[in-house]
Image (cartoon, rainbow, N blue to C red; front, side, top):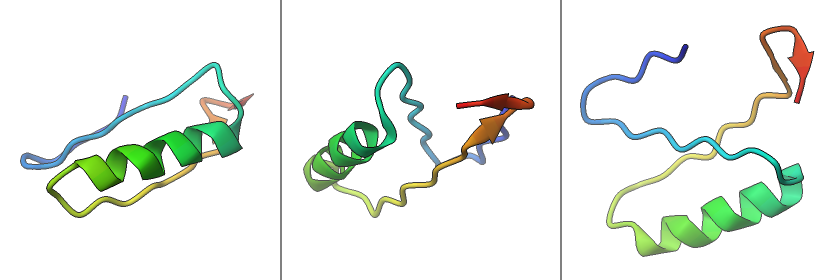
Amino acid sequence: VAVVKPGKVMFEIGAVDEETAIRALEYAATKLPIKTKIVTRHHIGGEAV
């Protein structure tokens, strides 16, 4: 469970390698009219991602 404050948006990507996910998010960020920040997490809930 992630806490997302009002006015914020979170996108989660799975089933692809990290490099592809980051490239996709960077491309999507150029299309959005807002400031973006990409955050990665390698271990979620004790499982390697």
